[in-house]
Amino acid sequence: MCGIVGYVGPEEALPIVLEGLRRLEYRGYDSAGVAVLDGSLTVVKRAGKLAELETALDLSGHPAGKVAMGHTRWATHGAPTDRNAHPHLDCSGTVAVIHNGIIENFSQLRARLEKDGHVLGSETDTELVAHLIEERLREGDSLVEGVGGTVKELEGAYSLVVLSSMEPGLLVGVKVASPLVVGVGDGEMILASDIPAVLGRTSTVIPVDEGRIVEVRAEATTFTDFDGNPVSPEAITVDWDVAKAEKGGFDTFMLKEIHEQPAAIRDTLVGRVDEHRRLVLDDLRISDDVLREVDKVFVVACGTAYHSGLVAKYAIEHWTRLPVEIDIASEFRYRDPVLGRNTLTLAVSQSGETIDTLEAARHARRQGSSLLAVTNTVGSSLAREADGVIYMHAGPEIGVAATKTFATQMVSQYILAMYLAQVRGSMFPEEIAEVLTRMGELPRQVHQAIGLDAQVRELARRFQDSRDWLFIGRHTGFPAALEGALKLKEISYVHAEGYPAGELKHGPIALVEEGVPVVAVATTCHVYPKMLSNIQEVRARGAEVIAVATEGDQQIREVAQHVIEVPETPELLSPVVVTVPLQLLAYHVARLRGCDVDQPRNLAKSVTVE
Image (tube, rainbow, N blue to C red):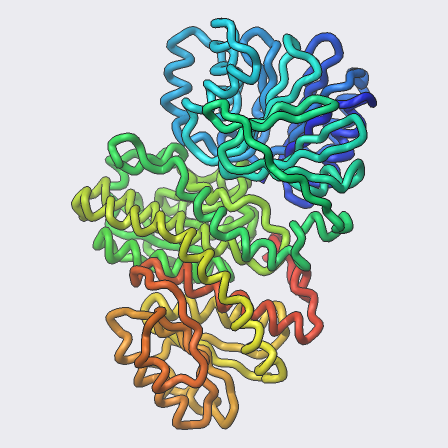
């Protein structure tokens, strides 16, 4: 999510760090800052884009120094403001930290530090790390020892870069799940979150392995594990151009973001459960007493977010026994919905700026409904106007067609459904714990589904010239079918429609003729026998059936010509996994047809006009 660049070498560090940050702008960010060792430690940071930071540097003077680090922040803890921007300092002003990821035990660590007398100037989880290191330096630890001791107190998925005016000439990096690389130059080193930041200076890169600490000096690097044991990672030579490097070696942002889904789901799940195995939603801001009195839930959203809301309807109703209405946001306020203080309105928008969703949310609040936002963007209009927020933590999504944000929207709403069940007592704690355990398996299952890419590409090649497609499903397979059809039509410009499989005989089956591809979501579920019957109906009329089925299912092969097997997943969670091959199918059809998958015609990433 965030961009990290650190430099140690013979040249002025600040221009090199700023150039590295520019190369990471594609990742998306809402604030930026730098720390430069120029005898003392100088920190300059600003909300907004790099231009705002550079204006501030022009006004204050560019600090000179051979060691510096910079950061572009995608907000998670705390709004995108000057004080929440990185780098963050300890009480003494001698230790600076930048950070990518999430510290799960943030609340407990903050309470302990404040009790011990530390003065915290931001709302972030990052600042805590600087103060934890400060405590260890007071006890006589070196910087790398202080960092090593501190990471043993941290829970979460993150990467860190730390510098101190007490040990000039040294950067210390840490990798726990979030990416970190060292660029090896001629008498200089660059520590960065992503390869593009180093390509202007070197093509020799050392990827930092999981659970490693790296000491970076101008002439050498030292790698250890968290117990201090030395390790020797291998350097690689990167032959990407900068444009491809921004895409992580993938040809397009969309494919990169499909592959980022396991990490995005993992980040969305991080920090949601306390030490007692109870769900904790820090940004919810709606009291449990209010949630206990809710007698109806409304979900408002557009496009892909609407499909995630359909999935949420199934989950919330099943786990909480609350009735749920789902509305396309642009239609919501015009139908005069019956809202009141005992209703909860869930507004879902990746950007938090979708005008139709914003207007629907505002209407719900005017009618007295509690408003909860599900969004990927801290400080967005929707987040500011809602009573509470669930942040998706998907990171920036550059491709116009939603992929990883669809997955994280579903996971975020599962978390809300579980929280409502916990508060209202509609499920036993053991039942909630079991669902959370199964949700924890989703990153691995999605990774396995991404591995189907080659098989899906061959199917795309076979059907690339088809002008009409049908996608069918039942129960949670229906919103997955809708999403599969939407992906195909928006990036390949092919006519595709999603239907509940049981509705075929009420009209859509008239579209089925010899050779028409019908994609059937037919994983194991309580309506699986009915799906088999629906598949047989279209097969009898000449359809080419592509079934997305549970691995090991032999029965499906008797009725479908083509079968894509995905890992077995609980019925309510299955859309997270089954949509992956549908995304890949749309992607490959579009590429084979010569379409621009990242910027399809007539579409925008965020729709801000009605």
